Amino acid sequence: MRFLRTPDERFDGLPDYPFSPSYTEVAADDGAKSLRVHYVDHGDGSSGETVLLLHGEPSWSYLYRHMIPVLSAAGHRCVAPDLIGFGRSDKPTPRLEYTYQRHVDWMREALFDRLDLRGTTLVCQDWGGLIGLRLVAESPDRFARVVVANTFLPTGDREPGEAFLAWREFSQNTTEFRVGDIVNGGCTTDLAPETVAAYDAPFPDETFKEGARQFPLLVPVSPDDPAAEPNRLAWQTLQSFTHPFLCSFSDQDPISHGADRVFRKLVPGCRGQEHAVVKGGGHFLQEDRGAEFAEIVNRFIATT
Image (tube, rainbow, N blue to C red; front, side):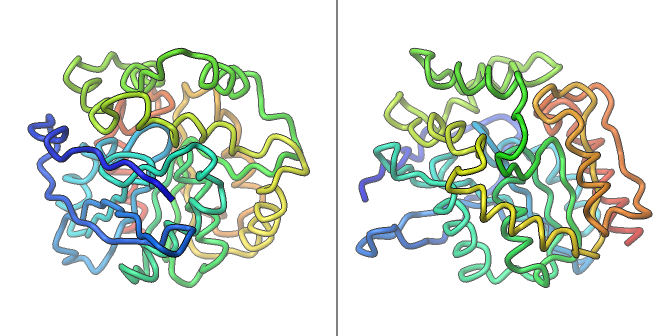
């Protein structure tokens, strides 16, 4: 497996991102190489709680920079990895090296086999949920709680919705995949130019964006998709998951709108929770309402 590694100087001086990089390695599929996974590990964990923050498409751990200080101030240890293909993590090439199953396998190895995270509160958005919820289903005893935000676990058994289909078509047909502008377009607030540049930082040119380009094609949109059956099996486990499970969706995300109702209906851990609607937040609510979202997570941990 061939891969690209973004030069470290691309990450120098990013605004509001003072976190020191940490790295671990996972096996490449050919067994002959390893891939480097970057993660932020911040906070002393004096509360005894570890919060796992999983980003989605096409962002990276920078997305959580406004939440990590609020969570760590409450005594929590924050672990925010960059998915393979994003951020400071390695970026395999060509695009067909990326599959849904490989993303799950890479994160399982990084978070469980290498970091041995246990008793974790998962906070996941977008593809962070598509991957993170599979990990919850595989190893439910490693998770104390789950917070889902603007995400789902699709099986291809229902229509994906016009907003997602439009995004998928755009992602495949646009000549230049402008990551920072895409994130900005998924926010209700207008990001500063230096913030847009920070989302572009992991991708010096189009060759570094193959994982980002491929992600929309990996979402199951038909019942016979390769990931459809594994996701159905994951739902079976989630329908018996009794640990606290919170929905914190924003009110202005056309892609995930209404998905919270499915979680609240099917996941036992949702019962009795004070589910939150983050008003004024777009798809990337961590940008639009990051501190507010972090306080929701803090309250959830404190009360469960």
